[in-house]
Amino acid sequence: MAILTIMATGHTGSSSAFTGSTLGFVLLVIGLLATFLSGRRYLLSYLFAGMGYWVVVEGIQSILVNMTAMSRGYGYAAALVISWLAIAAFIGYRYKQYSAQQQVIPVKRTGVEPLSRRSAFKLIVNKVAMLRKAAKTRKQQAKYIEHTPIYNNYKPRFRN
Image (cartoon, rainbow, N blue to C red; front, top):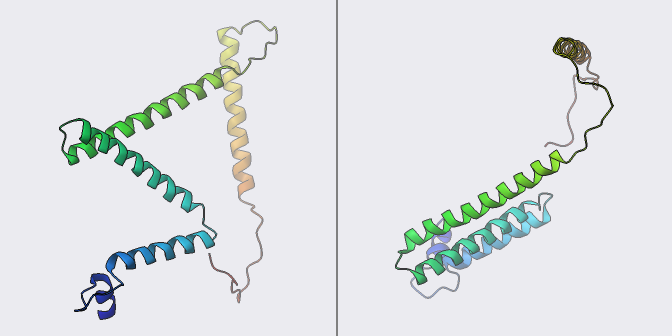
């Protein structure tokens, strides 16, 4: 433990080449390399996306602080709000685009006249009855799930 303390603080009484920042950098590189070589390397994309987002926030904050008389703390708060507004605008744009795409789906015209209220009600009642019957059938089928046999001495070779 004393060795880790000396490596992290760099206070050995003499000048040490292995400082706390070097230790942090080495641990970061080891973590990135382990993640890259594992089966979960997709997590690196989240890491780099978060780093890119923070670079953008830092840039906005720097511009705000240099152009106005705003403090650094308020600059960060304003930069975060501006970035969140940009993300909300993008999500709203995508939602509008998605909903417009859903409305473009063509409606099949059959040439049949509109239903009266009574026949529409019967149609709805029949549809609900059919859905209940289908749900009951699915429930009955769910009782009989096919599975692999269970052994008394089963020992899995691999764990999740």
